[in-house]
Amino acid sequence: MREPSYQEEWDSLSDAKGSGVKHLHVGDNVFSDVFQVWRVGGRAAPFFKTAPGRLERELDKAAIEPPLLGSALSGSARTARLRVKPVSDHDETLAEVSAGFVGPLLLAFVVWILTEARRRKVDRLFFLARDGQILLSIAKKIVSAYDLPIDLRYLHVSRQSLHLPAVLDISEGDLSHFGFKAGNSLADVFRKFDLDINHTAIAGLQERLGIRSPHAAMSRAEVEQLIRYIQTDDQVRDLINASASSARRLLLDYLEQHAFFADGNVGVVDIGWRANLQRSLAKVACSREAGFDRRLSGFYFGLYHRPENCGSLDDYLSESVGEPIRPLIRAPIFEALCAADHGTTTGYTRADDGSVFPKLLTRDNPQALEWGLKIQQDVINAYVDDVLAVLTAAEIDILDCMDGLARGAAVVTSQVIGSPSRKEAIALGSFPHASDQLHNVFGQVAPPLPLSARKWISRLVARDGEPMISEWPEASVVRAAPPLTAGMMLGGLSVARWLRRRL
Image 1 (tube, helix red, strand yellow):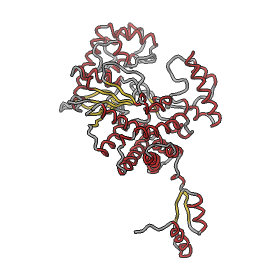
Image 2 (cartoon, rainbow, N blue to C red):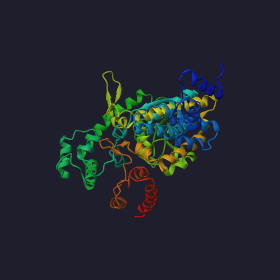
Image 3 (tube, one colour):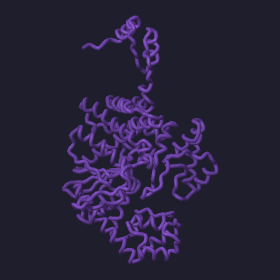
Image 4 (tube, helix red, strand yellow):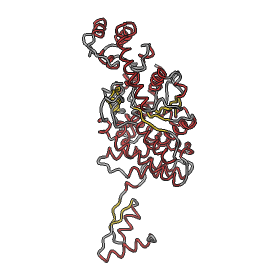
């Protein structure tokens, strides 16, 4: 059936004026969709949300090659955003950012992962919890769309579940991965070793340290002294070794269940930043199969540290395609973009039938879900579906589009991370981030900057390892100040960073 022409639609509206039939014309163009309809006596309902947002416009004008890819990236950002029915301004902004920034960035990253995995002849690719949940979802869509010969799996692991099994000799290197620091209590320390704080050997340590309560925060000197005692006290060492051995058996059986030791090359995927999970995985795996690290590869968004003897290590930011966004990396924000809907893995447990299952701190992730995680994940998945629908219909192999995908990712990352709008800064900056291994303490990743010169100066000279303003200072500034003031403050922030590096 022939579609009516533009003029015929106007004639229909004109005819309806005298017939009593009421048509409602909906559109986002003030002149064509509203004024012209009114001119002929019709009813119009403007719907401006269909107009491209700022990130969609940036993608559209980014000169991405091939041109159809650029159209797919910008158009899919709009269609994915419009699928959401927001109930608040926060939800609406989160949908815009997820479609226009997070989707393009993670899609580029996953395409790089699959390209590198193919180059390294990886047979099975394991996405590590929890950062790997949304990355696995994207990867499955690509593998299914292009029928790629690679096995994709998900591993429930964490710092807490891997570092204890990897303790073989209680070396200083082993202990450094537990992140002991001032402010920890004796109970915090031995919880990471999965030991009862009431054990007589631990009570003896408490007495030797002169700590009044196992739950009292320790000073840096007390933590350092405790670590020395752990390394030299035979009874405590035996306790930790026994706990580590038990945890290692469970972990090895869990890995066996998921074909981690099957023939072929193995890859693991994580965001980063120190590859310590891969280091612990390799150490445990090598305790069962000597030389396992020779067939293990790791794929990361970024790496600040590269441990030895744990297989190959590749990261997106070290590639030429990742170069434009290297200065924009704010690690906790990138972890927020890959948040999962379940709690962290605390260890493993054996069922009556002998199978091993992960133990989760919480069944879901209540803080992230309350923030809007479901919207973020739904929009990202919708975005990838729409991009793949366009490319497969056009018979374009997405693995051949790395440069164009990286170009799009760099453009929107620069906009959101480097120059966020106030709404974007509030939506992403309010993500509840927990930096501690036990996930006990949550804080906004980019809270509003306190407008106090005294606090700025105190942070400038701080030596406690904390960020000067927040994990994402640009967003903290934008959240706290009017646009003109925020611009000047961001300039001052650059100067402050320069000064802090030299103090």
